[in-house]
Amino acid sequence: MRTDGISVGKAAWVERGPGGVPPAPGITKTDDDFQQLGVEFLSSADGIDLSELNELFEKASGGGCRGGHQRGPARAPSDVGFPRREPARLRVALENTHRIVWVRSSKQSRVARLGQLLGFARATSDGVFSATIWDVAVAPAWQRSGLGRAMMERLTAGLVEDGIPTITLYAEPKVVGMYRKLGFRSDVDGIKGMAFQRKGGPKDQLQRAPASRR
Image: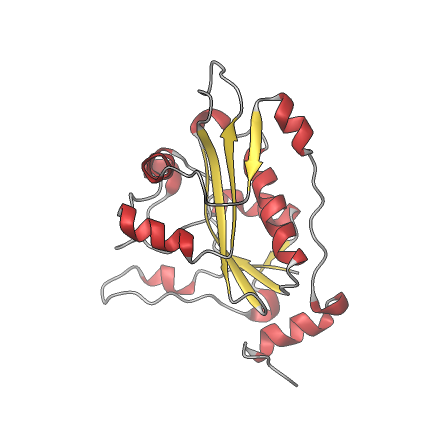
């Protein structure tokens, strides 16, 4: 069996899919629908204000999809949000991101100012075999509006369009249900996710399993 540079277990899953790539999730609410709410989606990092993005990370409980830059034990985003990142390092992270979906307000309203950053999600990838989704965050006033799901649908659809067969993410327990509805599965073929931690880090974090698109 060819592994294509990934684990045999993942390769077996990939080969079972139609053409090696899982189908893209459906778009439940169109861009026009969101435009009527004063919301627009963008797929380029151009125009993102790093200070505003950091504020979003700090304030948002987001989609429960953790970032890859935090130091020390992971904390529940519903309690403290994501950690603030150094602007220079955050810029490098965006430059090395494969796909981005972010959302801004297209009109002034009581819950958003014109041009305000409302949501963000990104994916890193080798562009061929696998991709990982990070940093899904939604502004508090826009949570439970379907914005997080909409970003994930568009981001995942873009990765499928790129022909990437294995798409993974690390999900907080409270949002696992949403990701399952999008086609993600945990413990695919018994595969476990592991994270390199300094000695003394929480043991349970080393065995947190990633969810994968099936």
